[in-house]
Length: 370
Image (cartoon, rainbow, N blue to C red; front, side, top):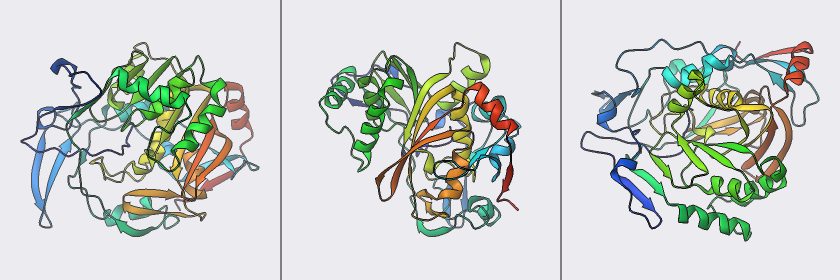
């Protein structure tokens, strides 16, 4: 999934290390093979506008791989299927899950470290939805990512679970308790079920889900991560997409959740490739992973306007127009205002019959790309 809120800088002198959270000393054979270290990818160093740029190639490939088509996902078009949606008209987009997961697993790309301090002129119309979501100010982050593997012990995770059960907040976000309380209200859809977490800096979201009865949580994370709890498994998005495409015992998830992650996708802040549609692709990937009828709780920073805006390269601030694109093909059950700048969107993937009915009721075509 092309999104992360963690640093990922690598230099030729760096090698993967482990940072331990808890009481266990990590074994070297427990280190995640994925990092942006030189041993896992080719690098070409050049000087562009008096700054050093490290161009990094997808670690799976030494030769370019033609990307699968993104289709309607990578556009600002869609077809209205429910004009009386809770917050805005709901849209339908055609999603080819095989292609979307193929793009995540096999697409070759280059990224820049440090990231560009402004998007290329040719990409500005796509980043801004042709001006509907302008870049209002520069809030630039040049840091990349550590190659250290973060190791969280079973005792560390259990301590978080205990705090959740005691009603304590287990993260530092102002909106974090709001996420915890919202998930608790939907606990009947978590208890005894399997879920996915998109993006993790610390496993507080995983702990909340386990505290509310999830039997298995899968975390998708680009950076090196080890969670030593048998109920949690960790994949890089590349590896998960490989399993998905290969049919290697991958079951669709009953539910999913993400917080403070997707708004960064495609902006290059974390040495991810520039992609105007990075957040929309990430949502389409998630849609492909969730069972029909499944729940997804999406936490995003939001503006007070319909248009929204971009703080380059920090994050997007979502307005109605972009949210409508983000939540295409989902049913919006609830919008929870956590703070002035943070909202939760409780979404449900329609059951198969509902999806078919929606496609038969297509009414008005939206297209912001013209």
